[in-house]
Length: 115
Length: 114
Image (cartoon, rainbow over all chains, first blue to last red; front, side, top):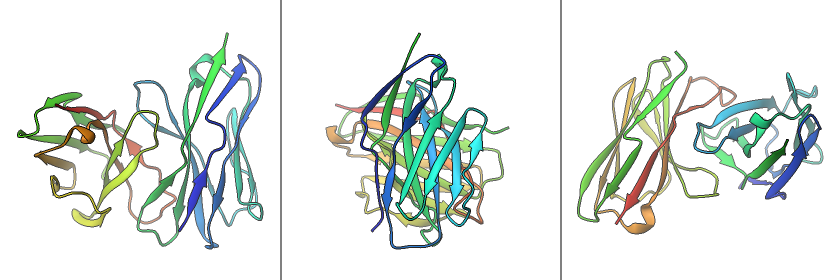
């Protein structure tokens, strides 16, 4: 069975600085998809960024980028120029090519942004 | 319109009550999901509907009964719940075709069982 591990329950970053959230996963599959979701306090969960495992190039969305290391089964999220609005719970998630739309979430990392 | 709506926002019910949660989307998504989320925990998948048919049931107790009456609506019927069922219930939807497709989440219904 696949597992997703986020080893940092909480992280803190100064506004305008850069922070990296860690995620590792375990799978025996070769085709899969990885996601980072953001859940602000009392607000809807939204997709931040996603990566197809067969693509070597790291995904980037504005201030958000990932470091995808397939052999190491690592999928970290880098947030550049952190803003107060980035404060949220961040979940790393895994989906199998043949998983029938089942999403496996990590435990989450709470990010605090200091002004 | 990229919105998933859920009603009610909050629900308090007794263990003998029957209530329903409602979810709606108008994005043409044919995959719809129910998740349960306890405080400070990740969402746990409960059910997945594909083309209005139940495709995944994660061994959820029968006191939770899902229903997908059409391609835009998803209901979760609740009966004889336990206090440990108190949680945030999230609905989500996505396009069919690829697991890469983005899931759109609703704001959730916060359920308290007394």
